[in-house]
Image (tube, rainbow, N blue to C red):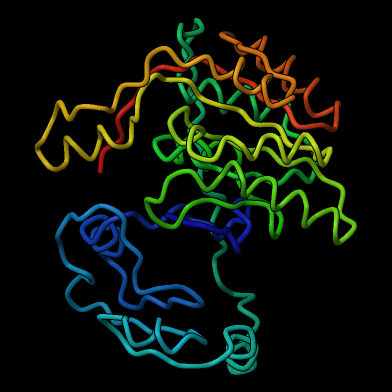
Amino acid sequence: MSDRVSFPENHPLYRGPLGMSVRAIGERLVGHDLVVVVGAEVFRYYPYVPGDILPAGTELLHVTQDPAIAASARVGDSLLGDPRLTLESLGELVGDGGSRVRPEPMPRPRDLPESQSSPLTPTEVYAALSTVRPEHAVFVNESTSTMAEHAQWLPTVEPESFFATPSGGIGWALPAAVGIALADRERGASRPVIALIGDGSFQYSIQGLWTGVQQGLPIVYVVMRNHEYSILKSFADLEKTPGVPGLDLPGLDIAAVARGFGCQAVDVTTTTELEKEFKAAVDSGSTSVIVVTTEPQKIPL
């Protein structure tokens, strides 16, 4: 799970996310003789699904400036050094690559149902947001069960414009959006902050809404209301413990709570309503909450 994106996802060389488990990453690397990891961990995992860290016959070179990250790498050879300086030095040793075949951009399947779902699917929500995406917006995502839809419909194309969780901690995104907006103000940047959050994650630090309102910060929270902790239900299936209690979230009036903290807040059920209210929230330049009812979905872990 990527907590930052440091490579433009609309670049022809971008090939999509690596995977979240030992098995998923190992299978993704099958058929490659060399893996080079620059400025990242070897590897970061989320669910425990055992498998081969590297396929047989695959070598790995690791470049990092963090000795702890180098020490924790379980395979390959680690080079301790500044990633940028290392890449610049390596670049001087190779040709310009003009004769190499350049790959086509990664295809992004964008199939939507002929008629709108009720409640909306996460795919429909992200597709709608992609049509009204503000220029130079920064995205904060803590809707772990819909990260794939985010990457598909809202690719990161600018530096320092995507923030998400590297692990499973819950409740950081609401105040993180406030912190990012405050930091932008401090450095003189003017851009809307869009926080995409599940209805469960939204409850942990909800008092951060008050700070956003009092500081007049340009934040739009899009809360996907699926009435459950979908990601935890996916983990329950993975661990063969279905029916874990406490993972359903009925009876929450999120918009009413948000209004109690001084936010503009609305409930929407269609993509037309979502697009209209989202544009109005961005144009207001204030802290707003849009609660969109969505269909629960489990993700394969």
